[in-house]
Image 1 (cartoon, each protein chain N blue to C red):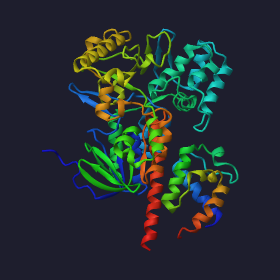
Image 2: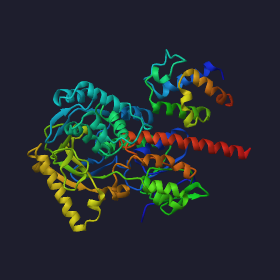
Image 3: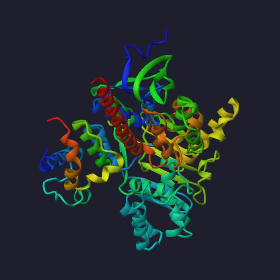
Image 4: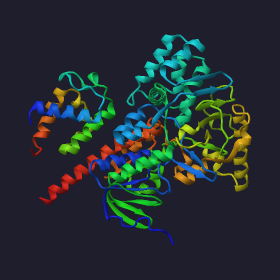
Length: 479
Length: 85
Protein backbone atom coordinates (compact mmCIF):
# COMPACT_ATOMS: atom_id res chain seq x y z
CA UNK A 1 0.00 0.00 0.00
CA UNK A 2 1.23 3.48 -0.83
CA UNK A 3 1.50 5.73 2.19
CA UNK A 4 -0.71 8.80 2.09
CA UNK A 5 1.87 11.54 1.91
CA UNK A 6 -0.84 14.16 2.21
CA UNK A 7 -2.50 12.78 5.34
CA UNK A 8 -3.98 15.45 7.64
CA UNK A 9 -3.31 18.14 5.08
CA UNK A 10 -5.16 21.42 5.62
CA UNK A 11 -7.60 22.50 2.96
CA UNK A 12 -5.95 25.92 2.52
CA UNK A 13 -2.52 27.50 3.02
CA UNK A 14 -1.34 31.07 2.59
CA UNK A 15 1.59 29.77 0.53
CA UNK A 16 2.50 26.47 -1.12
CA UNK A 17 6.16 26.02 -1.97
CA UNK A 18 7.01 23.53 -4.71
CA UNK A 19 10.42 21.98 -4.11
CA UNK A 20 12.89 22.10 -1.28
CA UNK A 21 16.13 23.40 -2.74
CA UNK A 22 17.96 25.94 -0.61
CA UNK A 23 15.88 28.77 -2.11
CA UNK A 24 12.63 26.92 -1.38
CA UNK A 25 13.64 25.94 2.14
CA UNK A 26 14.78 29.46 2.98
CA UNK A 27 11.68 31.14 1.63
CA UNK A 28 9.54 28.64 3.58
CA UNK A 29 11.34 29.57 6.77
CA UNK A 30 11.08 33.32 6.11
CA UNK A 31 7.37 33.16 5.31
CA UNK A 32 6.62 31.02 8.36
CA UNK A 33 8.49 33.52 10.53
CA UNK A 34 6.33 36.26 8.98
CA UNK A 35 3.31 34.38 10.30
CA UNK A 36 2.15 32.78 7.04
CA UNK A 37 0.81 29.23 6.88
CA UNK A 38 3.20 27.36 4.59
CA UNK A 39 3.05 23.96 2.91
CA UNK A 40 6.26 22.71 1.33
CA UNK A 41 6.05 19.86 -1.18
CA UNK A 42 9.14 17.90 -2.30
CA UNK A 43 8.87 15.16 -4.93
CA UNK A 44 12.05 13.35 -3.83
CA UNK A 45 12.54 11.38 -0.60
CA UNK A 46 15.31 13.76 0.48
CA UNK A 47 15.16 17.51 0.97
CA UNK A 48 17.68 20.05 -0.27
CA UNK A 49 17.40 19.89 -4.07
CA UNK A 50 20.99 19.78 -5.30
CA UNK A 51 22.17 20.44 -1.73
CA UNK A 52 21.62 16.86 -0.79
CA UNK A 53 23.37 13.57 0.00
CA UNK A 54 23.02 9.82 -0.17
CA UNK A 55 24.21 6.80 1.79
CA UNK A 56 25.63 3.51 0.58
CA UNK A 57 26.35 0.13 2.19
CA UNK A 58 29.61 0.06 4.09
CA UNK A 59 28.88 3.26 6.01
CA UNK A 60 29.48 5.60 3.09
CA UNK A 61 27.85 8.97 2.89
CA UNK A 62 28.28 11.32 -0.06
CA UNK A 63 27.44 15.00 -0.46
CA UNK A 64 26.22 15.83 -3.94
CA UNK A 65 26.48 19.57 -4.45
CA UNK A 66 30.12 20.59 -4.73
CA UNK A 67 31.20 21.51 -1.23
CA UNK A 68 32.43 25.11 -1.10
CA UNK A 69 30.64 28.41 -0.82
CA UNK A 70 31.48 32.07 -0.05
CA UNK A 71 31.83 33.66 3.39
CA UNK A 72 28.44 35.39 2.97
CA UNK A 73 26.80 32.08 3.89
CA UNK A 74 27.69 32.69 7.53
CA UNK A 75 25.69 35.92 7.66
CA UNK A 76 22.78 34.61 5.60
CA UNK A 77 22.48 31.42 7.66
CA UNK A 78 22.54 33.40 10.89
CA UNK A 79 19.86 35.80 9.66
CA UNK A 80 17.54 33.43 7.84
CA UNK A 81 18.24 30.20 9.72
CA UNK A 82 19.90 29.77 13.08
CA UNK A 83 23.01 30.74 14.98
CA UNK A 84 23.87 27.04 15.31
CA UNK A 85 23.81 26.57 11.53
CA UNK A 86 25.97 29.63 10.90
CA UNK A 87 28.44 28.51 13.57
CA UNK A 88 29.00 25.19 11.80
CA UNK A 89 30.41 26.94 8.73
CA UNK A 90 34.19 26.62 8.53
CA UNK A 91 36.86 27.68 6.04
CA UNK A 92 38.62 25.27 3.69
CA UNK A 93 42.22 26.36 3.56
CA UNK A 94 43.79 23.87 1.19
CA UNK A 95 42.71 24.88 -2.30
CA UNK A 96 44.98 23.56 -5.05
CA UNK A 97 45.33 24.09 -8.78
CA UNK A 98 47.17 21.59 -10.93
CA UNK A 99 47.28 21.98 -14.69
CA UNK A 100 49.87 22.25 -17.47
CA UNK A 101 50.13 26.02 -16.91
CA UNK A 102 50.68 26.14 -13.14
CA UNK A 103 50.60 24.26 -9.85
CA UNK A 104 49.77 26.23 -6.76
CA UNK A 105 48.08 26.21 -3.38
CA UNK A 106 45.94 29.11 -2.20
CA UNK A 107 43.72 30.18 0.69
CA UNK A 108 41.37 31.55 -2.00
CA UNK A 109 41.08 35.16 -0.90
CA UNK A 110 41.83 38.54 -2.47
CA UNK A 111 45.14 38.94 -0.65
CA UNK A 112 46.44 35.55 -1.66
CA UNK A 113 45.24 35.88 -5.25
CA UNK A 114 46.96 39.25 -5.44
CA UNK A 115 50.18 37.73 -4.08
CA UNK A 116 50.05 34.88 -6.61
CA UNK A 117 49.26 37.12 -9.56
CA UNK A 118 52.03 39.57 -8.69
CA UNK A 119 54.78 37.22 -7.45
CA UNK A 120 54.18 34.10 -9.49
CA UNK A 121 52.46 35.38 -12.62
CA UNK A 122 54.37 38.66 -12.78
CA UNK A 123 51.31 40.88 -13.20
CA UNK A 124 51.62 44.50 -12.02
CA UNK A 125 49.99 45.00 -8.62
CA UNK A 126 48.01 48.05 -9.87
CA UNK A 127 46.47 45.90 -12.60
CA UNK A 128 45.41 43.24 -10.10
CA UNK A 129 43.93 45.83 -7.75
CA UNK A 130 42.13 47.54 -10.63
CA UNK A 131 40.67 44.19 -11.71
CA UNK A 132 39.43 43.33 -8.22
CA UNK A 133 37.93 46.81 -7.84
CA UNK A 134 36.23 46.61 -11.24
CA UNK A 135 34.74 43.20 -10.36
CA UNK A 136 33.57 44.43 -6.96
CA UNK A 137 32.00 47.54 -8.48
CA UNK A 138 29.82 45.58 -10.88
CA UNK A 139 26.10 45.73 -10.43
CA UNK A 140 23.08 43.92 -11.84
CA UNK A 141 21.93 47.12 -13.55
CA UNK A 142 25.24 47.76 -15.31
CA UNK A 143 25.91 47.30 -19.01
CA UNK A 144 25.43 43.65 -19.94
CA UNK A 145 27.10 43.71 -23.34
CA UNK A 146 30.66 43.09 -22.15
CA UNK A 147 31.52 39.40 -21.86
CA UNK A 148 33.74 37.82 -19.24
CA UNK A 149 36.25 37.05 -22.01
CA UNK A 150 36.41 40.76 -22.88
CA UNK A 151 36.80 41.69 -19.21
CA UNK A 152 39.85 39.42 -18.90
CA UNK A 153 41.25 40.65 -22.22
CA UNK A 154 40.99 44.23 -20.93
CA UNK A 155 42.97 43.60 -17.74
CA UNK A 156 45.16 40.62 -18.62
CA UNK A 157 45.58 40.60 -22.41
CA UNK A 158 46.98 37.35 -23.76
CA UNK A 159 47.31 35.81 -20.28
CA UNK A 160 45.47 32.51 -20.54
CA UNK A 161 47.14 31.35 -17.31
CA UNK A 162 45.62 34.25 -15.35
CA UNK A 163 42.24 33.64 -16.99
CA UNK A 164 42.42 30.00 -15.96
CA UNK A 165 43.07 30.73 -12.29
CA UNK A 166 40.34 33.35 -12.11
CA UNK A 167 37.78 31.47 -14.18
CA UNK A 168 38.06 27.74 -13.50
CA UNK A 169 36.65 27.76 -9.94
CA UNK A 170 33.74 29.97 -10.99
CA UNK A 171 32.92 27.67 -13.91
CA UNK A 172 32.65 24.77 -11.48
CA UNK A 173 30.67 26.83 -9.00
CA UNK A 174 27.96 28.04 -11.37
CA UNK A 175 28.54 26.70 -14.87
CA UNK A 176 29.34 30.10 -16.34
CA UNK A 177 31.53 30.50 -19.39
CA UNK A 178 33.75 33.16 -20.92
CA UNK A 179 30.84 34.22 -23.13
CA UNK A 180 28.49 35.07 -20.23
CA UNK A 181 28.09 38.73 -19.24
CA UNK A 182 31.06 40.17 -17.38
CA UNK A 183 28.75 41.51 -14.68
CA UNK A 184 27.61 38.00 -13.76
CA UNK A 185 31.26 37.05 -13.38
CA UNK A 186 32.10 40.19 -11.42
CA UNK A 187 29.26 39.78 -8.94
CA UNK A 188 29.98 36.10 -8.30
CA UNK A 189 33.76 36.56 -8.26
CA UNK A 190 33.56 39.33 -5.67
CA UNK A 191 31.48 37.11 -3.41
CA UNK A 192 33.19 33.85 -4.05
CA UNK A 193 36.86 34.67 -4.44
CA UNK A 194 37.44 37.47 -1.97
CA UNK A 195 37.46 35.87 1.46
CA UNK A 196 37.99 32.15 1.06
CA UNK A 197 35.95 29.00 0.51
CA UNK A 198 33.73 27.64 3.26
CA UNK A 199 31.90 24.41 4.00
CA UNK A 200 29.34 23.17 6.46
CA UNK A 201 30.99 21.04 9.12
CA UNK A 202 28.85 17.98 9.66
CA UNK A 203 27.96 17.48 6.00
CA UNK A 204 24.92 18.34 3.92
CA UNK A 205 22.80 15.75 5.77
CA UNK A 206 23.32 17.58 9.04
CA UNK A 207 22.67 20.99 7.46
CA UNK A 208 19.38 19.88 5.94
CA UNK A 209 18.40 18.11 9.18
CA UNK A 210 18.99 21.33 11.14
CA UNK A 211 17.00 23.32 8.59
CA UNK A 212 14.10 20.86 8.83
CA UNK A 213 14.10 21.13 12.61
CA UNK A 214 13.89 24.90 12.27
CA UNK A 215 11.05 24.69 9.72
CA UNK A 216 9.19 22.37 12.08
CA UNK A 217 9.71 24.75 15.00
CA UNK A 218 8.33 27.58 12.87
CA UNK A 219 5.27 25.58 11.87
CA UNK A 220 5.97 24.80 8.20
CA UNK A 221 4.06 21.75 6.97
CA UNK A 222 6.76 19.84 5.07
CA UNK A 223 5.90 16.83 2.91
CA UNK A 224 8.18 14.64 0.81
CA UNK A 225 7.45 12.32 -2.11
CA UNK A 226 4.63 14.59 -3.19
CA UNK A 227 4.78 15.49 -6.87
CA UNK A 228 2.95 18.63 -7.92
CA UNK A 229 1.30 17.96 -11.29
CA UNK A 230 0.22 21.50 -11.97
CA UNK A 231 -0.46 24.90 -10.51
CA UNK A 232 -4.17 25.71 -10.69
CA UNK A 233 -4.81 29.17 -12.12
CA UNK A 234 -8.24 30.71 -12.64
CA UNK A 235 -8.94 34.16 -14.08
CA UNK A 236 -5.27 35.10 -13.83
CA UNK A 237 -5.03 34.14 -10.17
CA UNK A 238 -3.40 31.23 -8.37
CA UNK A 239 -6.02 29.02 -6.69
CA UNK A 240 -3.88 26.12 -5.54
CA UNK A 241 -2.02 23.08 -6.76
CA UNK A 242 -2.84 19.56 -7.87
CA UNK A 243 -0.49 17.21 -6.05
CA UNK A 244 -0.60 13.40 -5.85
CA UNK A 245 -3.99 13.70 -7.53
CA UNK A 246 -5.41 16.01 -4.88
CA UNK A 247 -6.34 19.72 -5.01
CA UNK A 248 -4.87 21.92 -2.27
CA UNK A 249 -5.98 25.54 -2.09
CA UNK A 250 -3.62 28.45 -1.43
CA UNK A 251 -3.23 32.19 -1.81
CA UNK A 252 0.19 32.03 -3.43
CA UNK A 253 2.52 29.50 -5.00
CA UNK A 254 6.28 29.82 -4.88
CA UNK A 255 7.86 27.42 -7.34
CA UNK A 256 11.36 26.28 -6.48
CA UNK A 257 11.22 23.93 -9.45
CA UNK A 258 13.34 24.66 -12.51
CA UNK A 259 12.22 27.91 -14.17
CA UNK A 260 11.41 26.25 -17.50
CA UNK A 261 9.59 23.35 -15.84
CA UNK A 262 7.53 25.87 -13.89
CA UNK A 263 6.51 27.81 -16.99
CA UNK A 264 6.13 24.97 -19.49
CA UNK A 265 4.66 22.22 -17.33
CA UNK A 266 3.36 23.47 -13.99
CA UNK A 267 1.61 26.63 -15.20
CA UNK A 268 1.21 26.09 -18.92
CA UNK A 269 1.52 28.67 -21.67
CA UNK A 270 -2.24 29.36 -21.91
CA UNK A 271 -2.07 31.31 -18.65
CA UNK A 272 0.70 33.62 -19.89
CA UNK A 273 1.01 36.36 -22.48
CA UNK A 274 2.60 35.28 -25.80
CA UNK A 275 5.40 37.83 -25.29
CA UNK A 276 6.27 36.34 -21.92
CA UNK A 277 6.20 32.81 -23.32
CA UNK A 278 8.62 33.89 -26.06
CA UNK A 279 10.89 35.53 -23.50
CA UNK A 280 10.82 32.37 -21.37
CA UNK A 281 11.54 30.15 -24.38
CA UNK A 282 14.66 32.18 -25.09
CA UNK A 283 16.08 31.45 -21.63
CA UNK A 284 19.10 29.17 -21.92
CA UNK A 285 19.78 26.55 -19.30
CA UNK A 286 23.21 26.18 -17.80
CA UNK A 287 25.10 22.96 -18.33
CA UNK A 288 24.77 19.82 -16.25
CA UNK A 289 27.40 17.82 -14.37
CA UNK A 290 28.98 14.44 -13.92
CA UNK A 291 30.21 13.25 -10.57
CA UNK A 292 32.11 10.22 -9.35
CA UNK A 293 31.62 9.26 -5.72
CA UNK A 294 34.49 7.31 -4.19
CA UNK A 295 34.13 5.76 -0.73
CA UNK A 296 37.26 4.60 1.08
CA UNK A 297 37.16 1.28 2.95
CA UNK A 298 36.68 1.42 6.71
CA UNK A 299 40.01 1.47 8.51
CA UNK A 300 41.90 2.91 5.51
CA UNK A 301 43.14 6.49 5.60
CA UNK A 302 44.17 9.09 3.01
CA UNK A 303 46.94 11.60 3.55
CA UNK A 304 45.89 15.24 3.39
CA UNK A 305 46.45 16.41 -0.19
CA UNK A 306 44.33 19.55 0.15
CA UNK A 307 40.58 20.13 0.40
CA UNK A 308 39.58 21.18 -3.08
CA UNK A 309 41.68 20.36 -6.13
CA UNK A 310 41.07 22.04 -9.46
CA UNK A 311 42.82 19.72 -11.89
CA UNK A 312 43.13 19.72 -15.64
CA UNK A 313 45.30 18.25 -18.37
CA UNK A 314 44.02 20.74 -20.94
CA UNK A 315 46.74 23.11 -22.19
CA UNK A 316 44.47 26.12 -21.54
CA UNK A 317 41.12 26.89 -19.93
CA UNK A 318 38.33 26.27 -22.40
CA UNK A 319 34.63 26.56 -21.54
CA UNK A 320 33.62 24.04 -24.22
CA UNK A 321 36.20 21.41 -23.35
CA UNK A 322 35.29 21.82 -19.67
CA UNK A 323 31.92 20.19 -20.43
CA UNK A 324 33.15 17.59 -22.92
CA UNK A 325 32.33 13.93 -22.33
CA UNK A 326 35.97 13.14 -22.90
CA UNK A 327 36.89 14.64 -19.53
CA UNK A 328 40.11 16.60 -19.20
CA UNK A 329 39.26 18.81 -16.19
CA UNK A 330 38.01 17.69 -12.78
CA UNK A 331 37.48 19.08 -9.33
CA UNK A 332 38.25 16.72 -6.48
CA UNK A 333 36.46 17.46 -3.20
CA UNK A 334 38.26 15.67 -0.40
CA UNK A 335 36.25 14.49 2.58
CA UNK A 336 38.46 13.76 5.57
CA UNK A 337 36.95 12.55 8.86
CA UNK A 338 36.78 16.10 10.23
CA UNK A 339 34.19 17.00 7.56
CA UNK A 340 31.78 14.94 9.64
CA UNK A 341 33.07 15.06 13.21
CA UNK A 342 32.58 11.72 14.92
CA UNK A 343 33.09 9.80 11.70
CA UNK A 344 36.37 8.10 10.79
CA UNK A 345 35.59 7.81 7.10
CA UNK A 346 37.23 9.24 4.00
CA UNK A 347 35.63 9.97 0.66
CA UNK A 348 36.50 11.72 -2.59
CA UNK A 349 33.96 13.29 -4.92
CA UNK A 350 35.03 14.21 -8.42
CA UNK A 351 32.93 16.84 -10.22
CA UNK A 352 33.01 17.82 -13.84
CA UNK A 353 30.76 20.00 -15.93
CA UNK A 354 28.82 18.12 -18.62
CA UNK A 355 26.33 18.53 -21.47
CA UNK A 356 22.88 16.94 -21.39
CA UNK A 357 23.04 16.07 -25.10
CA UNK A 358 26.21 14.01 -24.68
CA UNK A 359 24.45 11.68 -22.26
CA UNK A 360 20.70 11.89 -22.86
CA UNK A 361 20.42 9.80 -26.00
CA UNK A 362 22.78 6.89 -25.29
CA UNK A 363 21.39 3.35 -25.39
CA UNK A 364 21.28 1.64 -22.00
CA UNK A 365 24.27 -0.46 -22.93
CA UNK A 366 26.33 2.50 -24.11
CA UNK A 367 25.25 4.51 -21.09
CA UNK A 368 26.55 1.86 -18.67
CA UNK A 369 29.75 1.60 -20.70
CA UNK A 370 30.28 5.36 -20.61
CA UNK A 371 29.66 5.48 -16.87
CA UNK A 372 32.26 2.74 -16.34
CA UNK A 373 34.70 4.68 -18.50
CA UNK A 374 34.07 7.84 -16.48
CA UNK A 375 34.74 5.98 -13.21
CA UNK A 376 37.87 4.31 -14.54
CA UNK A 377 39.42 7.50 -15.93
CA UNK A 378 38.55 9.39 -12.76
CA UNK A 379 40.34 6.89 -10.53
CA UNK A 380 43.34 7.01 -12.86
CA UNK A 381 43.35 10.83 -12.62
CA UNK A 382 43.14 10.62 -8.82
CA UNK A 383 46.12 8.25 -8.68
CA UNK A 384 48.34 11.16 -9.64
CA UNK A 385 47.59 12.66 -6.22
CA UNK A 386 47.00 9.49 -4.17
CA UNK A 387 49.03 6.73 -5.87
CA UNK A 388 47.59 3.85 -3.84
CA UNK A 389 43.98 5.02 -3.83
CA UNK A 390 42.67 2.21 -6.05
CA UNK A 391 43.21 -0.53 -3.50
CA UNK A 392 41.56 1.54 -0.75
CA UNK A 393 38.31 2.05 -2.62
CA UNK A 394 35.32 0.21 -1.18
CA UNK A 395 32.52 1.82 -3.17
CA UNK A 396 32.42 3.85 -6.36
CA UNK A 397 29.60 5.09 -8.55
CA UNK A 398 28.93 7.79 -11.10
CA UNK A 399 26.20 10.37 -11.58
CA UNK A 400 25.55 11.88 -15.01
CA UNK A 401 23.18 14.53 -16.39
CA UNK A 402 20.58 11.72 -16.55
CA UNK A 403 21.01 11.02 -12.84
CA UNK A 404 20.46 14.69 -11.96
CA UNK A 405 17.39 14.81 -14.18
CA UNK A 406 16.02 11.66 -12.53
CA UNK A 407 16.34 12.93 -8.96
CA UNK A 408 15.73 16.67 -9.31
CA UNK A 409 13.43 16.84 -12.39
CA UNK A 410 15.55 19.79 -13.57
CA UNK A 411 15.07 20.29 -17.31
CA UNK A 412 18.05 18.74 -19.17
CA UNK A 413 19.60 17.78 -15.83
CA UNK A 414 20.71 21.40 -15.37
CA UNK A 415 22.79 21.63 -12.21
CA UNK A 416 23.32 25.40 -12.24
CA UNK A 417 19.90 26.75 -13.22
CA UNK A 418 19.72 29.20 -16.10
CA UNK A 419 21.87 31.71 -17.92
CA UNK A 420 21.68 35.41 -17.11
CA UNK A 421 18.37 36.12 -18.91
CA UNK A 422 16.55 33.65 -16.63
CA UNK A 423 16.64 36.07 -13.72
CA UNK A 424 14.42 38.62 -15.46
CA UNK A 425 11.88 35.96 -16.43
CA UNK A 426 11.86 34.58 -12.89
CA UNK A 427 11.31 38.08 -11.48
CA UNK A 428 8.57 38.90 -14.01
CA UNK A 429 6.48 35.78 -13.41
CA UNK A 430 4.36 37.42 -10.65
CA UNK A 431 3.24 40.05 -13.19
CA UNK A 432 1.78 37.28 -15.34
CA UNK A 433 -0.25 35.43 -12.74
CA UNK A 434 -1.44 36.95 -9.47
CA UNK A 435 0.06 34.95 -6.61
CA UNK A 436 2.66 33.04 -8.66
CA UNK A 437 6.35 33.31 -7.81
CA UNK A 438 9.59 31.57 -8.71
CA UNK A 439 12.80 31.23 -6.72
CA UNK A 440 15.77 29.03 -7.49
CA UNK A 441 19.06 29.01 -9.33
CA UNK A 442 18.68 31.57 -12.09
CA UNK A 443 20.77 34.08 -13.96
CA UNK A 444 24.16 32.80 -12.73
CA UNK A 445 24.26 35.43 -9.98
CA UNK A 446 21.40 33.81 -8.07
CA UNK A 447 23.02 30.42 -8.31
CA UNK A 448 25.09 28.43 -5.86
CA UNK A 449 24.23 27.97 -2.19
CA UNK A 450 24.47 31.61 -1.17
CA UNK A 451 22.73 32.92 -4.30
CA UNK A 452 19.88 30.45 -3.84
CA UNK A 453 19.40 31.30 -0.15
CA UNK A 454 19.42 35.04 -0.75
CA UNK A 455 17.11 34.80 -3.75
CA UNK A 456 14.75 32.73 -1.58
CA UNK A 457 14.62 35.62 0.89
CA UNK A 458 14.11 38.24 -1.84
CA UNK A 459 11.16 36.33 -3.30
CA UNK A 460 9.75 35.50 0.15
CA UNK A 461 9.57 39.26 0.71
CA UNK A 462 7.48 39.64 -2.45
CA UNK A 463 5.21 36.78 -1.44
CA UNK A 464 4.74 38.18 2.05
CA UNK A 465 3.90 41.58 0.59
CA UNK A 466 1.22 40.01 -1.62
CA UNK A 467 -0.24 38.07 1.34
CA UNK A 468 -0.37 41.33 3.27
CA UNK A 469 -2.16 43.16 0.43
CA UNK A 470 -4.58 40.28 -0.12
CA UNK A 471 -5.52 40.12 3.54
CA UNK A 472 -6.02 43.89 3.59
CA UNK A 473 -8.37 43.78 0.59
CA UNK A 474 -10.27 40.88 2.15
CA UNK A 475 -10.62 42.98 5.31
CA UNK A 476 -12.05 45.84 3.23
CA UNK A 477 -14.57 43.51 1.60
CA UNK A 478 -15.69 42.16 4.97
CA UNK A 479 -16.23 45.57 6.57
CA UNK B 1 4.19 58.85 15.84
CA UNK B 2 7.03 61.32 16.49
CA UNK B 3 10.22 61.48 14.40
CA UNK B 4 12.40 60.37 17.29
CA UNK B 5 10.25 57.35 17.96
CA UNK B 6 10.45 56.29 14.31
CA UNK B 7 14.23 56.65 14.36
CA UNK B 8 14.41 54.52 17.50
CA UNK B 9 12.25 51.87 15.86
CA UNK B 10 14.57 51.78 12.84
CA UNK B 11 17.66 51.51 15.02
CA UNK B 12 16.04 48.75 17.02
CA UNK B 13 15.16 46.86 13.83
CA UNK B 14 18.74 47.28 12.57
CA UNK B 15 20.02 45.79 15.82
CA UNK B 16 17.83 42.76 15.14
CA UNK B 17 18.61 42.23 11.43
CA UNK B 18 22.31 43.17 11.67
CA UNK B 19 23.46 42.32 15.22
CA UNK B 20 27.05 43.31 14.44
CA UNK B 21 26.13 46.89 13.46
CA UNK B 22 27.31 49.49 15.97
CA UNK B 23 24.18 51.61 16.42
CA UNK B 24 25.06 53.78 19.42
CA UNK B 25 26.37 56.73 17.45
CA UNK B 26 24.39 56.87 14.21
CA UNK B 27 24.11 60.29 12.54
CA UNK B 28 20.58 61.04 11.41
CA UNK B 29 21.54 62.87 8.22
CA UNK B 30 24.21 60.48 6.91
CA UNK B 31 23.36 57.43 4.81
CA UNK B 32 22.97 54.37 7.04
CA UNK B 33 24.92 52.34 4.48
CA UNK B 34 27.92 54.66 4.85
CA UNK B 35 27.98 54.43 8.65
CA UNK B 36 27.02 50.82 9.26
CA UNK B 37 28.10 47.66 7.50
CA UNK B 38 24.71 47.13 5.83
CA UNK B 39 24.17 45.41 2.48
CA UNK B 40 21.10 45.25 0.25
CA UNK B 41 19.89 42.08 2.01
CA UNK B 42 19.93 43.98 5.33
CA UNK B 43 17.69 46.69 3.84
CA UNK B 44 15.33 44.01 2.58
CA UNK B 45 15.20 42.62 6.12
CA UNK B 46 14.29 46.08 7.45
CA UNK B 47 11.42 46.28 4.94
CA UNK B 48 10.18 42.81 5.96
CA UNK B 49 10.40 43.64 9.65
CA UNK B 50 8.40 46.87 9.17
CA UNK B 51 5.70 44.92 7.36
CA UNK B 52 5.63 42.25 10.05
CA UNK B 53 5.37 44.74 12.89
CA UNK B 54 3.20 47.50 11.43
CA UNK B 55 1.66 45.96 8.29
CA UNK B 56 3.08 48.75 6.16
CA UNK B 57 4.14 48.24 2.55
CA UNK B 58 7.25 49.79 1.06
CA UNK B 59 7.36 49.32 -2.73
CA UNK B 60 10.75 48.36 -4.18
CA UNK B 61 11.18 51.66 -5.99
CA UNK B 62 10.81 53.52 -2.67
CA UNK B 63 13.57 51.62 -0.82
CA UNK B 64 15.95 54.60 -1.33
CA UNK B 65 13.66 56.57 1.02
CA UNK B 66 15.19 54.52 3.83
CA UNK B 67 18.70 55.86 3.16
CA UNK B 68 19.13 57.94 6.35
CA UNK B 69 17.38 58.07 9.74
CA UNK B 70 15.99 61.51 8.81
CA UNK B 71 14.60 60.25 5.49
CA UNK B 72 13.16 57.21 7.26
CA UNK B 73 11.29 59.46 9.69
CA UNK B 74 9.97 61.70 6.90
CA UNK B 75 8.93 58.80 4.69
CA UNK B 76 7.52 56.47 7.34
CA UNK B 77 5.76 59.21 9.36
CA UNK B 78 2.55 59.29 7.26
CA UNK B 79 2.54 55.50 6.85
CA UNK B 80 2.91 54.87 10.56
CA UNK B 81 0.31 57.55 11.41
CA UNK B 82 -2.33 55.18 10.05
CA UNK B 83 -1.14 52.37 12.32
CA UNK B 84 -3.38 51.93 15.37
CA UNK B 85 -1.41 52.57 18.55
